Length: 294
Image (cartoon, rainbow, N blue to C red; front, top):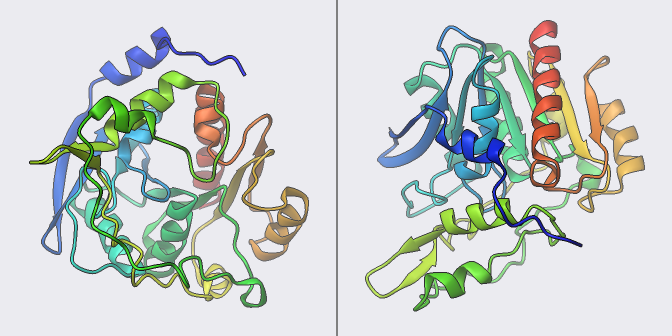
């Protein structure tokens, strides 16, 4: 696969687009956010995946800034946000709604990718009456009989490893689950934002204890049945996270009738990295559909 290493102009412009970069205090931790657009526009908050961070979606906020009050954030224990002494699934829900309230997002559409899809779903379980929609991105809802407890049996975390070189650590950056990605400029940008300076060297930004006590629960199907906002599903047609054919059928059965669904062609699990501008275009369409149904 031929990789694109040079940043294209549209991406440079997106990074330079006017936005606010700050922190919200949530239960004693500073939670990082970035924010674009006019507060009078429809509100959207986008949630990242496993050990990722807000910068994964910086270009998306910029591309959609003229239509939405768009916010991206980093969960506590990830990205530029503070670490905590203990995490459970409601920890991340509180992070989300703390940002929603502090930034005055009015009935937002909550978009969640992968792990962020799980958090978005649990958030809707508490706050769907104050949401215009829920969009699950490459995250499927399983009935209880198909439930997999993601972190069950994982070994307890170890202290973060310190490296003597930022450049060496950047070269170790990998997408999880593993996949090829031709847009090397995106991977390089995300990798650099995934590293922090310590007193002794360089380390990843995420807290290795994040999942030590985390139980995602088998009530996701039950939550879907009870929420009071429209739900959509956006997936990569080449995702390896699930069997696409059977999972589409399952999601059609589980989600409310008429829920918008879209598969992005030639895209894998990290579909916003595979086809960034096309992903953003169809994200806009799906958000509009959800707002229209609310």
